[in-house]
Image (cartoon, rainbow over all chains, first blue to last red; front, top):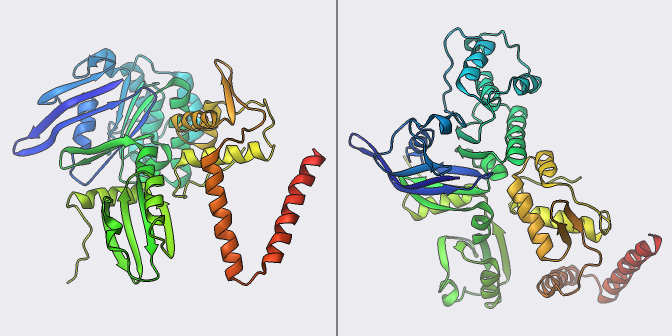
Length: 299
Length: 129
């Protein structure tokens, strides 16, 4: 559905994206995570057809996006700071969207009004930040997009709204096979709804994988021996991180669960505990592996 | 139908597989009963439909459910007993529990009585159906 091949983009001296490739299947929810300044927003803006890539190819449904109106009519981008015209009411903004998007669905707009529960005659600038964001979701979900691109979408929404918005997105994915690309720093949110994750760092795609595969491929191991730990323990084991706390050794290792557990058990440890990692931990350790790590800063 | 623990570390699809398996084993979902449609379950639980699809595929692969194209997924009657890997894992679990009980000073005889009681309960449950 969405194919990006070796896309690069630079702004004067800054190389924002370096040959990034990714592909997203129809009906998938793709989570884009990365360090600050990694190029997430640039990538999303290229996807939305706002920026033109310097090199590389980008297609949605095998068609280029930039200045391609039929594709852009089916694609919706909610930026991290949504823009609404000054002094426009919600209803005015809805008229504007209706003229912009041929698939605008007025009935759906009214139906969604029950979810968002705001009067359409209110001026958007008088609304709070979180409510303005809700208006963006309300307007954009009413134009029944095939591709929904979200930049830090759930920022500023309260927990109830978060859940409601996620639910609306899931429904569209389930019913209409809408394709979603989300960038966020809130990895808990992504973990619940994404099926695919890409990690971007300094303009390069570090890894992209099925979320479940990613989680079942990296493990946190707590192991302790009654005597000294055997010297061969860490051989042929892909260790991303290790730490010794007292007599317990904590390892973050990559590899299939069964293989690791049988290897570990062969050394007859006194304690052995293997836990799947949360997405947040995976992110931190993968980044640490690339030299972007949390160091204890002491003054 | 059921709740998932979204704070848990286990992947969502694994949790789904375990929950549905539990419902099938405990006969809450009866043989040939239809499982909820992917779309419905996705919006009920607010999780990705692809994840649910994957869990259903896994359950089918493990022989707990079958799917009828265009109709949906159904509970397969009689769960096959050829799940060696899982049985091995369960045996290990049991071993761990028993060694902890022994360590805490429960006499072996008492453990056997406990087991017998639990087994009797399960079989009694079956007769009631």
